[in-house]
Length: 399
Image 1 (cartoon, rainbow, N blue to C red):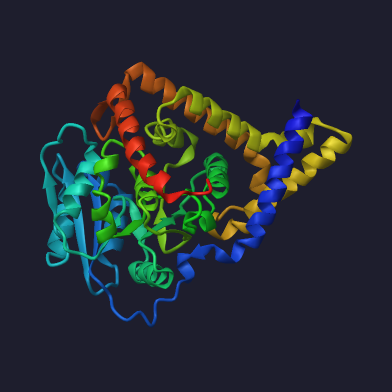
Image 2 (cartoon, one colour):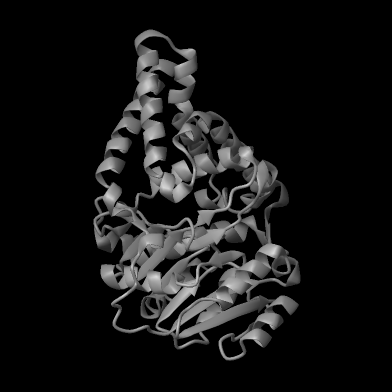
């Protein structure tokens, strides 16, 4: 069994390496985007939400706020949303740039909405900006970020741009975890397929989702994904499946986020969303665990097999490391991290099992101090997928 799995996994990695090699030049790096020659700078609204000072008073939050205020863009509105709480941190932002910062205060949560989606929807309704940039309260930006993003959007004539940020990694084992996470994104969301209108592949990162407001309004904003825990990814899906053009770019320095540090923090950090990513389905969760293991097979085969099978495993491992080598500029991790994929896959499997177990034990998910029942979340998935599925059917994607 291991030999056959090794042959299949090695063949997959070899083909994906060749695919990545061919498409390498089409990978868009926001850090290298030239923004000179743009005819005009339309109004942009940068929007993020927070539950209060426990989230934003950290060093990360302070650094992020400072980077937002330092953005070099002539027509920018910053809209922080205080979601059912008060934030002295946001008040300081307002006092430092009263003409640029427009604070939205949300005091109650309507039924059928998540706190975050409701907050972002409320903020988007207050602005007349042509472009909306949804982000998180701990994301740091280089001063020219918005100019680079708009230059890329104008060059591509796109309606939506999402950026995989430069992760500020923690200790070694956290890097191992994130390496496997990055590998899944590389294989599951190739930028060339996200950009193609022939494929349904979509993506969205909470750190950077920039969308044309007319497109955002056309899909009803966050209404169809109002109870989607992974609202960032589902926003990308809603836009693309409605016929709008989307682009996925990478960054190491222009957009940065210090995500969860260390394996323990990562396990807690993905607790709410890794099971949500498979729509709270046990069958799909088990399938993803198989995918995690399948990705580690060549490295395992390299150790456990012999003869021809070991040679095939070596080819698969080399191809895996080649994929990571091609992506090193966007991930910041070297090719040799490919040897750690079995451990990273184990971490991801533990995260999935833990997330699912907690969801069933609690009969729901706790996010931002609010409990959402599993029944309501599953009912939303059915309604959301019906709406998005109808749009997808009209597109007639190849897959």
